[in-house]
Amino acid sequence: MLHIDPAACVDCGACVSACPVGAIAHDSKLTPEQLPFVEINAAFYPPRPPGTKLPPATKLAPVIEAPRVAHRQGGPLTVAIVGSGPAAMYAADELLTQDGVRVNVFERLPTPYGLVRAGVAPDHQDTKRVTALFDRVSRTPGFTFFLNVDVGSDVTHAELLDHHHAVLYAVGAPNDRRLDIDGMGLPGTGTATEVVAWYNGHPEFTDLPVDLGHERVVLIGNGNVALDVARILTTDPDVLARTDIADHALAALRGSRVREVVIAARRGPAESAFTLPELIGLTSRAEVVLDAADRDLVLRDLETASDPFVRKKLEILSKLGDASAPVRRPRIRFAYRLTPLRVVGDERASGIEFTVTGTGEIRRIDAGLVLSSIGYRGKPIPGLPFDEVAAVVPNREGRVIDPDTGRPVPGAYVAGWIKRGPTGFIGTNKSCAAETVRNLVADYNAGLLTDPVQGRRALERLIRARRPDVIDAAGWHAIDAAEIDRGGGDRPRVKFTRIPDMLAAAARASAPPLHRRVLAGLVR
Ligand code: NAP
Image (cartoon, rainbow, N blue to C red; front, side, top):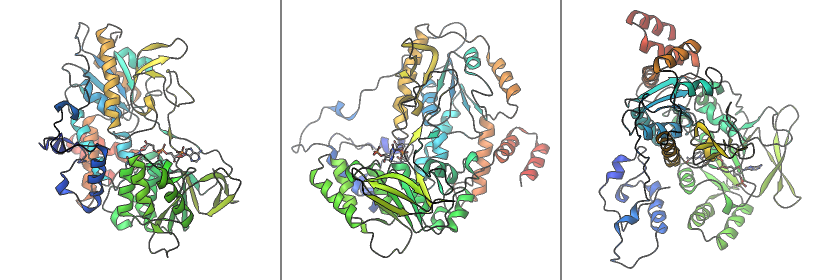
């Protein structure tokens, strides 16, 4: 969350117009749901006597700029970025602030922007607006997309290094952390992150079996992902029908019998993993309840909590409705101090048993769908070291480090979740990527990066030979335009959820007019 010092702010409004996701608003223009943020913002700053003069520098954290690229013979600084989510696009943006730098972005899917497209919930369209910024970056001179290319199988790390000074991996944390208890794996169990990918139309999750034919869903873990999934499963489908939720998910939600989603945490209310803004967003849209025992835990934590954010969360939790009230519409229930023990059921899940944390007491909750929501996990990158415990590539401020020697691996860099683990929000990746780029440019200037042995044409030939259906920026813009068109003005877009449909839409961008008409007919 961002805070603005009301005493130091000069009210110029520049941040309001610059914020790519519209997160900053004047306090006189807030909606009723946003009003709690006035108090939260004020509480962040210490009380000051009226008329206190602040030094002008208090508003801004020091900005450390990347060193200027010291151009040299042998061609411009050329960087391959692997992945196209926020960390990748912020790194590209940072590199391209300098003249003459070239950036090639490689992405496994035919569509870019990683979790902004496939992770951010469809009812958070404001957050997805950051893609307009990324589209602008992709149009910067020196930027090239190589979409639908899998680094590691279509082209190796060594081959990329032959064609670039450096390879920067911003591949995120694509796996789930798995909950290792009996019964996980039965039909009716799964992970929240898979469900997120499913409702966001990720092509590899289109056919995920999500059975909404039972009255209760249990989510294990109470981070922001659990809140997103719970909200989507309980929101009126007519509201979701105005978003870019995948059509298959919308159809399943229209037929859903789910009446209650329980979000079960192993610790107490004060340790809730969700963030304050997300809790405010949830409680202003959904019906959220607590049972009497959990309300007691909240009130007990309120007596001792000193952190203002934790206190605010607890105050909101303490005012939630009562779980004993009749269920009028699908609702969400927070539950605390429940350590998962085993999923029960023979052919499929019928519920889950927990121990009450720290005791031997067993508690069972009946449910037709049990989803673990205990975080993402990075996966190893072929050719680079990997820290199995932290599930990140070992690095020092973005420079990949060989754990055996403690020295940097020449030409290899990381940014985003594969660098620091799956934490933070989209904007966190901006400073994270900037730090990596700063070190990459310093290494280039110090002569530590080997000039590419092959030129740009050779790279294009190599990629086309390996991946004839590679998609460039024009191809992506054609997919984007076709999806927006399918939205018909009522929805932001209707996503393609099958790769052949994406490829056909992209092909229309490069095909001659007659061919384009034939393709259009084929797709329809
Ligand atoms: P998360 O915030 O790390 O939460 C993980 C949850 O799983 C915690 O409640 C944790 O409890 C629990 N957990 C871990 N291991 C467990 C186990 N063995 N048994 C039971 N519970 C266990 O993860 P996330 O929700 O996947 O979110 C990932 C990141 O994405 C976060 O930084 C999140 O803020 C961000 N995100 C942000 C937004 C947004 O801003 N709108 C939306 C989605 C995601 P303990 O605390 O007890 O370990």
